[in-house]
Amino acid sequence: MSASAAGPSTGTAPPASAGAVSEANEEAFDDDATPLASEAQDHVDLARRVHATSALPEPAQTRVFVVANQKGGVGKTTTAVNVAAAFAIKGLRVLVIDLDPQGNASTALRIDHSEGTPGVYEALVDATDLDELVRPAPDLPGLTVLPASIDLAGAEIELVSLVARETRLDNALQGYLEDCEDAGDRIDYVLIDCPPSLGLLTVNALVAGREVLIPIQCEYYALEGLGQLVRNIDLVRRHLNPNLEITTILLTMHDARTRLSANVAEEVRKFFGDSVLRTAIPRSVRISEAPSYQQTILTYDPTSSGALSYLEAAREITDTARKDD
Image (cartoon, rainbow, N blue to C red; front, side):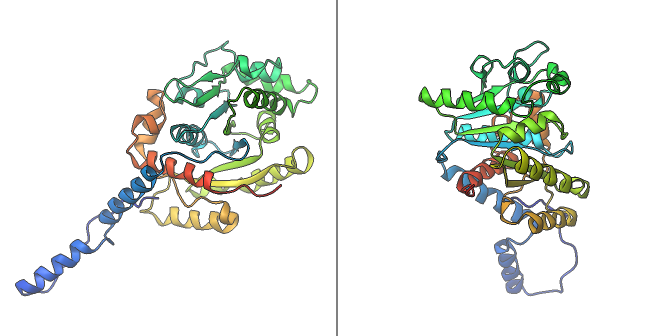
């Protein structure tokens, strides 16, 4: 997590001798506590940690993450595609399931999702096999995508009348993962990008998932409704998917210059404890720019603080052993 620069310090110093000035200057250059020096040092340290890891370890079994938060604008899709890209860059096999009718995850990974493009709608409504629908991400070897098109907008209505409507994604996904493993091409991580709602699409994701990753923007509005999300996850766990756990919380749009970010981070860590990653994603224009070029931040600007932070977050996720069921 990198700190951001504040303005230069102000104030006057009393007259001093040449020797004293020299000693003071030497101490100032050695002092890493100034905001600008601290930010630069944090960036260098983060880059060293990231580049020291050439490959991430494969999990003992496929880990299926649901990236969920019913509030929009908290960095949910950005987190899903960039964590997935970080896994792929570090040698893991990854599947991204775009469950949002807007198709933003598909856009960021340069996957066609125009109206009529076969994708997750066909998997849910028509029970089409995923191996007919999954597409490779052109810029990231090892990463595949189940795209979403605008057709998915009507899926919630159509799902209402279908048999086992809450488990259709789980059934399709488990069959696909078994086929991949039998073919010697096991998927290490699945990330399901949910729409900003708690409807049937999100319920399908929560039933198919085993772990929940919640991105939380470092703003107080982002905390509103978080309790409802946790209660809904608990309901799904008790009635539909006993294997579901909230294992990962990622702070996004973090601005180290503000007390607000620090206070929100403190509240989140107090509530979720060790589930909160140490790495927070900084507020960054570069992260926001990347999707307009149909790229993740890791391919758009791989040396930026945002790219390095997502790589470090991915490393933390792989290092954190999943709790026993």
